Image (cartoon, rainbow, N blue to C red):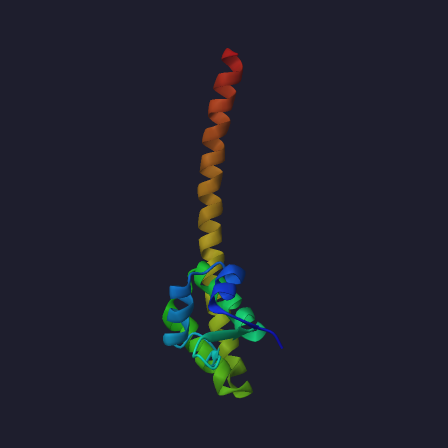
Length: 124
């Protein structure tokens, strides 16, 4: 099993060291990050996989409290799978609403671009 220093984890995840430490302090990780004999963090592949999921949840707008709740549920065990599913379905619905709104906005931009392209092609 390979372990990664915080510098390597920064490189792999694209997050800052500050963000990685914050995720750990705020209960967003599944387990405590291992430490070497000097007390430096060592991230496992499992840690990095989980951090990738947390990053995706945050990037899609999931509030920290919900990410924390999801992590708590995972740590609590398999009997929480129904709650986890409900939380993820709720978040998915929110993301789909956002996607529909953005798609609508993109359509307005495309229509405006079309107007300018038509006007400029007539003059050219």
